[in-house]
Image (cartoon, rainbow, N blue to C red; front, side, top):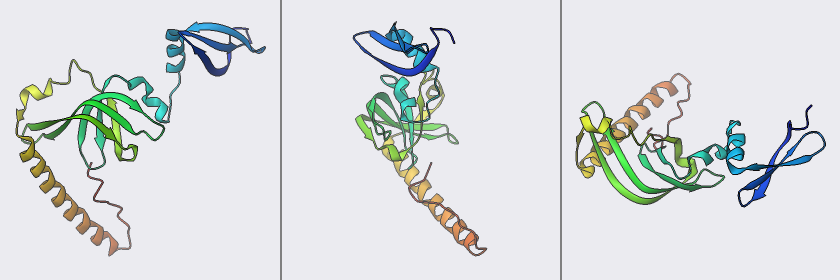
Length: 177
């Protein structure tokens, strides 16, 4: 094993210089924050640490109740609770080629309600909206509510049908995504 081979993934430091332990003799080597970012990018995080690269970037968040939020991720914690700034809630009706949006400002999202999130390419974000008709948000919210109620009734009916055969159909009203 060469002396510059990393054996300890711990990084520590402050003020732009980070110390990385290398080699089998716990020697230290100073690296820049840029090098540290590249070092951390090599790992696939499967925890909330995977979100760290999206801080201060525009993201999309799908919530369990089906709401779609777009905003700048400012911070998060170990439970994936999110703080979004300049947040906008959008409702899409792709079949009718319509959408609605409402400004939400600063928005806190409880992590247990997050189904999916991802970064938004701000250069391409508005492209699909150019071909869609914008409708009033209240009208869209009412339509979404009615659609969700119809879905809930259909899913409840399906659960009862499957229960007659001894099968369990796990559907909750809060899961409308």
